[in-house]
Image 1 (cartoon, rainbow, N blue to C red):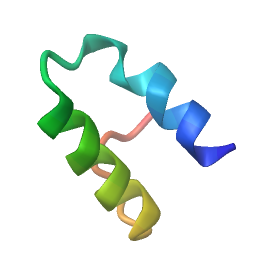
Image 2 (image 1 turned 120 degrees about the vertical axis):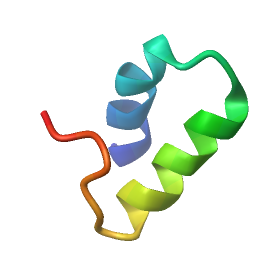
Image 3 (image 1 turned 45 degrees about the vertical axis):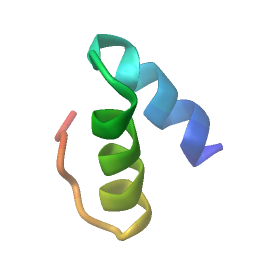
Length: 35
């Protein structure tokens, strides 16, 4: 699922706020962290 992809991207995140921000941007269709 998309959340699983984000979790794999979030391995380097130091806090949950950055993780949630990534989810919001990803679910919003924005590519905040290009592969």
